[in-house]
Amino acid sequence: ESFPPPSLPTRTLSHMSGLVEEDDVSLPSDSEDEENVEEAVEEEKVTDLSDTKVVTKYLEAARIANLALSTVAAQCQEGRPILELIQIGEQVITKSLDKIYNKKEDGEVVKKGIAFPVCVSVNERICNYSPLTSEADSCPPLTAGDMVKIDLGCHVDGYIACAAHTLIVGSAPTLPAPECGDVAKACHDAMLVAAATIKPGAKNTDVTAAIAKVADAYGVKFIATVRSHQMKQFVIDGTKEIALCPPDVEAGEERVQEQEFEANEVYCIDVAMSTGEGKGREGEDRTTVFKRNVDVSYRLKMKASKEVINAVNKAHETMPFSLRTLGDERTAKMGITECVNHKLVTPYPVFNERAGAYVAHFKTTVLLMPSGTTKKVTGLGCPEYFVSEKALDDENATLLREVEEAEAKRKAKAAKKKKKK
Image 1: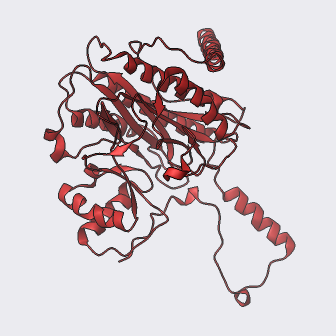
Image 2 (image 1 turned 180 degrees about the horizontal axis):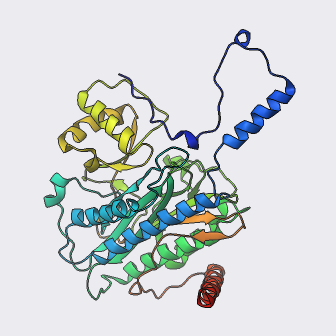
Image 3 (image 1 turned 90 degrees about the vertical axis):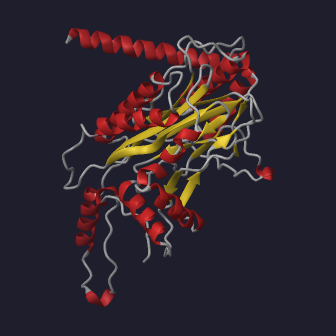
């Protein structure tokens, strides 16, 4: 039995005619050709921000992602088990999605779900920590002073909103060290600078250059393996990407091609920074987060592997998923190995910094609107207890001040308009 990539809804695909032999049909006239082309164009569904319905779906996904993020953040209290926090986030996403888009569109069910598993990574863990149920007891609960990174994603009809946040555990949090404030402020500022720099006509290298000044100002380092990506319908990591710092090609890091941003595009701005070496490395934690490689097929041998890939194709398709969601845990752990070995799925390992390093992680989703403006739709503000004696460079400080002023004017205008109603 062969396992091809999952098929996406037909309304996400371009109109395509079948392949036939020339002798089987009479060739249409030029006028008929033109009519067929016009019909094909009419049938092709618009999947970018030029369609207001698409924008609405992004905004709904963002609303739910923000709700889940803020809920989990509020529950990060001393003594809380990590798995319990993850399950709270998952419940917020799934229950919120159950309330919207329950009618068919173009005769098809609107697909909704978790676009990136809820992960809670503590202290030197950088990202992707989402333990299995059987591993819950081996993971200590949160303690006061822990530096926690929450990461998650949600989608409505394949339109994805992702977000990440960093906080310190405690009713009145105090920073374990001054460097903790430096790295958190730097990471959040870098995310804002990146979001403000991304606009139609700008290039990905412009963003890399701008945020490099942020790292220098605060004296911290980017986690080099983390990159930001363009997102499309049912695609969480598109081909356009942004490096946090220039790749070290000699050390084996993949080169990033210079590319220009365009209106109607969507990007996930993903920033992780550290007081350590800036190098993520795999530790002893089990990898539990994976994503289906939709362009790869292979005839699996093991029954457990077939059950795993069938479950993935049915429930997650192109989105990253946690092994914990695939049913029987023993079967999932047995079956995923063959799937990884034959590249049917891509693993998302748990990355760690060196012990004692402080790591911050912030993530937002930005929409490059048809009007030319950039709309940041996910993410929470930087907690006030993250303070630093260091400051942004003048250029980026001015940029963020202008963004804040524009946002304040927009909110005042919206409030005035609402009051008139």
